[in-house]
Image 1 (cartoon, rainbow, N blue to C red):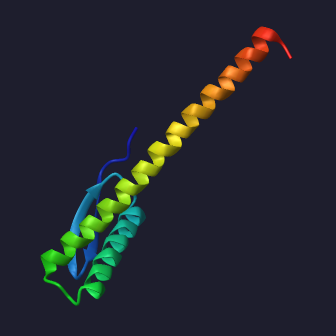
Image 2 (tube, rainbow, N blue to C red; image 1 turned 90 degrees about the vertical axis):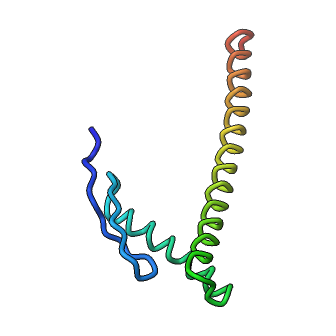
Length: 99
């Protein structure tokens, strides 16, 4: 059974956003802090660009981090699949032919 959705009020760059989610409030607040850090990083590197511009740049950075991690995950899963097949081949050989 999933937890019921609850609303967590977060603040990013001085703006409040009610977030409705089944995730815990602490997790939602952690995400908000991370997003704000990314926005502040873009702001400090680009000498205070207009609000929308800095948020779009932060979103691009976050998307890049997400896709980079997603690719790493896919690579690890592929290696794990290959290792599993190798181990299965060894075990099958041992069972079929003995030690």
